[in-house]
Structures are given as C-alpha cells and as structure tokens.
Amino acid sequence: MTQRRASSRVRPAVLIVVAVVILGAAAGGVGSLMGNPGDLAPVLTGTSAATPTAPTPTAPAPAVPVPAAPAPAASSAPAPAGTALAVLATIAVKGRAPATGYSRTGDFGSAWLDVDHNGCDTRNDVLARDLTSIVRDDRCRVLSGILDDAYTGQRIRFTRGETTSALVQIDHMVPLLNAWETGAQQLTQTQRVDLANDPRNLMAVDGAANQQKSASDAATWLPANKIFRCEYVAHQIEVKAAYRLWVTRAEHDAMARVLSGCPGQRIP
Image (cartoon, rainbow, N blue to C red; front, side, top):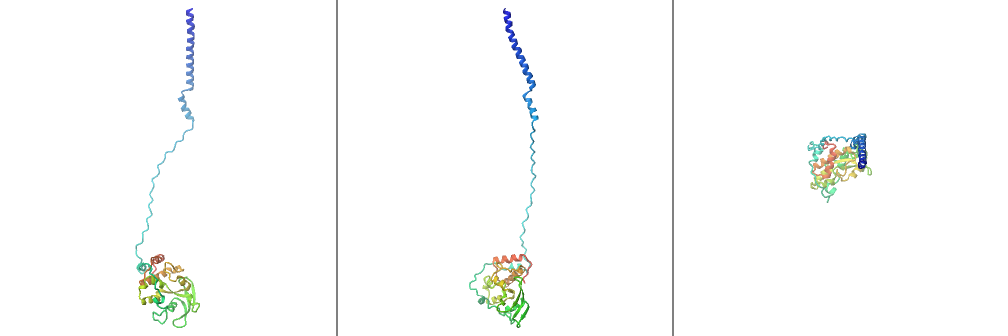
C-alpha cells in the first residue's frame, strides 16, 4: 500500500522530467534551425545594396605663378635737337600774367606796318607769300588770289573788296594778347612791334576760323584741319622761344600732346 503510493508519486515527477527534456530538445532544434541571430546579420548585410565608396580626394595641383607684366619704362631720352619738342622743353612754364593795361595799338603798334622797309605793309607781304595765282594793282597791293587754307583745309578764292577782303585774314599764331600775358609785358616797345609783324608768327587764313580762335592758346583752340596741328604748334613754339615768352601748364601739355603724334616735327 505504502509502496504503491510512493510509486504513484514518482510517476508524475518522471513525467515532468521527460517533458522538460522534450521541451529542451525542441528548443535546441528550433535554435539550430533558426541559427544564431548574430549569424543572420551577414546574410542580411550581404543581400542589401552595397554602400558606395567615396572617392579619395585628389590634392590640387600647385598653382603656377604668372609673372606680372613689367610696367612700361618712362622715356627719359631727350627729344632730338631741332625738333619742336626739344625747343618746347627749353620754354619756361608759368601762370598767366594779368591782361591789365593791354592795348593792341599802344603795346604792339599800328596794324600792318612796313617793318622790313620793302615798301609794302605786312598784310600784303603775307598775302603775297601765302596765296597763289595772285594779282596786284601795283608792286605791293594784292587784289586777288587763291588760298589753300591751312586751318580748315579748304580752298578760298580771295578778292579784295569792302565785303570780301575779310574772308581771308592774317592771323597771329601766338595771339598778341596771349603774348602779353606770357612775357611780352617785359619786352621793349620795339620788340613787341617786331613780334606783331614777324612773318614767323603770321599766316593768311580763313577769316571765320581766325575769328573763332580769337586770343586762344593751344590748350583751348587748335585748327580743325588736324594735318596742320603739328606745324601749327611748332610755329607757336618757335615764336615763344624767339621772344623769350613762356607757356602755361595747360598750353605746354596741349602742345606736347599734339607733338606726341609727330615727335620728329621740326621748327619751321
């Protein structure tokens, strides 16, 4: 009786142990079937898209220095002797003197004297020099002629007359007022009269162009005929040097600019 009871108690315990063993085996089988979770990672990773590899940055090529262009050297060579530029370099540069007291007749004498004592006044001397095909009524007075005007480049037929003579006028290339303001005040009366009648400073020109120029210097007026500009400022430089007149800074620079295009221009 007692043995049967003990036996009946052992039987359930055995069943429990057997169940545990069966469950453990089952669990082990499942584990072996599933594999280690850590073993799945390579499989999943292997089936996923490969991560692109970033390109290795290339070191930039060293910059090659570009040599700077040399600055143009300033020309220090003097202008050739005898050129207008060379003579311009000898003329003083000063400010303009006051025109106070200026009088064309009082300071430079009456217009068109016969300073060379050839029996003809200066105006007729210049007309005879600058016109072609001239006709005279006597030894001096020019009645007609043809002017190839240097200031405008135009051809003008000159005929002496009350309403036609003014079509051709005699210009002082260095205006007398400009001369007065740039040193002529320091000249003697005789020297100023010579300046007013000096053929180097006189030219027969188109009357309208002469009126337009008036007393302007090279800084404010130049001939419309550009071909003549080099010779024009060379005439002015010649006269200013001959009478020891000076130029203003603006006048000097204007002359130099013109002559930069014709550095070989000589004094006429």
